[in-house]
Length: 194
Image (tube, rainbow, N blue to C red; front, side, top):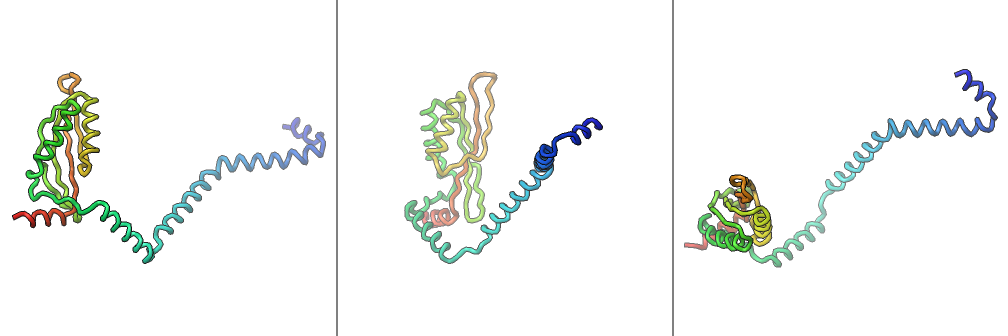
């Protein structure tokens, strides 16, 4: 340590004037990197979240509501009236079975059972569930599921379970399809049929 102090005293004063501020800057930079960077990043993130919340909490103007209402009316006009639901889950089962079977045959899948799994009313909507089973090779089942998802569009996949059969390359698949529609259409359909 004495040797270092003696070298600093013997050093050129101009070199010391340049080296000491650089040393202080390096120490300050190291402190920033080690101690202050994370809290500053958290503070910036918090400010950005507060700004986003404040923007979201702004009251909606009447012009915004009117423009959203017009956009909704345009979409409703493009989509047309909602499709009517059948009064009973079983009455819509046969067309669904036919469509699922046609897709299964197209992809080389053996369709098993298709049975209704009940209806659940929820906040102005009616969810109709169907349990479906099928067998086939994995690529064929994957292609069949993709076709079901795209071609039977209002139906959504709620549950999916599969397992191999006796160590073979055949897989058994069970799934639950859900159809969610507005309750008003179900009431009008059941009121229209005698």
